[in-house]
Structures are given as C-alpha cells and as structure tokens.
Length: 309
Image 1 (cartoon, helix red, strand yellow):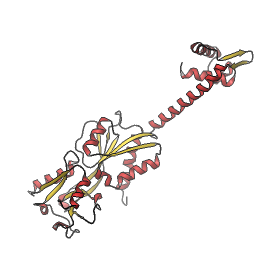
Image 2 (image 1 turned 30 degrees about the vertical axis):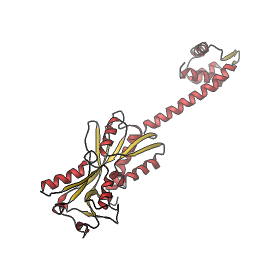
Image 3 (image 1 turned 180 degrees about the horizontal axis):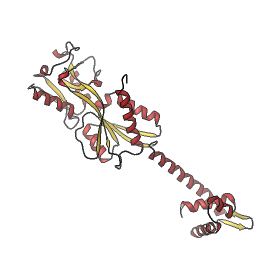
Image 4 (image 1 turned 135 degrees about the vertical axis):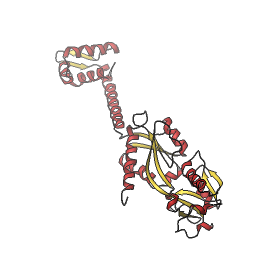
C-alpha cells in the first residue's frame, strides 16, 4: 500500500463516485477502479458498496476513511516540517561557546536574535573549551561554536573571525601595575611577573602569543598557574595569585579586586571572536537551521563592525 492508494481511496469516498473522483485526480476511470479493487484485495475486505448512482462506504471503508485521513494529514505535516527545516526555519541546533566568548555581548545577543526571529529553531547551548568545541563540530555533535583563537584547524571546518577586540592586562588591585590604570602598559613592565594562563588544550592562542612576544623581547615571566577556563584566571587575579591577559569584553569582572590596563600599541595583542562551523555541503554544515544561525551571526557581526554599532 502506498500513500497514493490512500489518496485515491479518499477521493472516491469524498465524491461517492469513481468517475468524478478520477476527474479530480486527473486520471481515467478504469485505472482508478483497478487501484480501488487492488486496495480492497490487499486489505481483504470490501471498502465500497457499488450501485448505479455511485458508491457508498462500507463499515470497513468508514474505518479506513478515518485512518487514511489521519495518515495523510500526518504525512503532510511531516513534509511541511521538513520543508521548513530545509529552508532553515525550524529544527534544533547545538551551539557551543567558551567562557570568554560568552563574556562578549555579541554571544547572548545572537542567541536572542535567533530566538526572536526564528522561534521554531530550538537552541541547545553549552560551555566548553576551544578544543572541545572544535572536536564536537568536526564530529557533527555540535553545529557551530564561538571561541577566541582556534587551537587547531581540522580539515572540513571553517573558522570565521567575526569581531576583534583589544587584549587587556588583568592586575590585582594592590599590585604595583594597578596604579595609573589610564596609561598603557609596556611589555617590559611584565619582566619578573607571575602570569596565570589558560591551558594549551583550552584556548592557547592569546596566551601563546603573549609568551612568544615576551620571549622575543627577552621579557622573563613565570607561569604561576594554568587553568581551563578564562573566567577562572580572572578569579585567581582577584585573589592576588598573579597577572593575566583577557579580552576587553571581560573588563568589569571583579571590579573591586581587579584593574584592567591596555597594552601599548606596539604590543599588538588582540582577542578575536571566532565562529567555527562545518563547510557548506558537508553533512552538518551549510544547511537547515544551522545555516540560518550562521547567517544571523554574520549579519550581527556586520552591525557591530559598523560605525556606532
């Protein structure tokens, strides 16, 4: 039995006449009669009582009419849902973000924009480190993620820099470098200081860049602690364990215990906000609601980059 057989049956049931049903279906009467008889033979019971003026439903026909109506309605609804999914208007996507990416106003803003503009797209969000997000997107367990500097660039993944922001030095409030916070910090002023860094498996880029810069300029620093989340290092800075480097959007965390200072322009340390997703045409990339979300992220990033954005 195929869906077309149920459509044929319902057309005859609704019109009470095989010839009129055939006209509605755009087919000849003999093939339609054959299809109805074949359906009755398959089910092993008569569905219609034939008479000179047309046909009437038997009890079995009445039973099938209700079942067929529900089945076709369910099929139509399923088809509509899938077409809406293909257009990127409904479905479920999993979005990951690092703690430092979540600290940027952009991340909650794009989630709100998606929920407001596309209420039929369900968003599952989770916090992970950059390595976990990259691995999950590559494996298809996650559709996309927001991170800072990529820890790896596996084949098949796209890393889009949505925004750039300055990197700041986070300093315990009672530290000597906390004085005169309005003046930029020179790299040489870090000589002999203790740094709190995120582990390389988490988000090494910003910290690796700082260490490389210090090594190149013969600035000696000590790694006082390594943590897995960027917000953890701010907590340790607040506790006086050492200094750290953070994106500007993190400024404001522990304002009573942490001072944030910009670096001199020559230091050239910045913190990107990066969107990672699979390439278009892959199984989980560039289609359905994931494509809609990615397009929204690009749209919002352009707004942020615009003057006054």
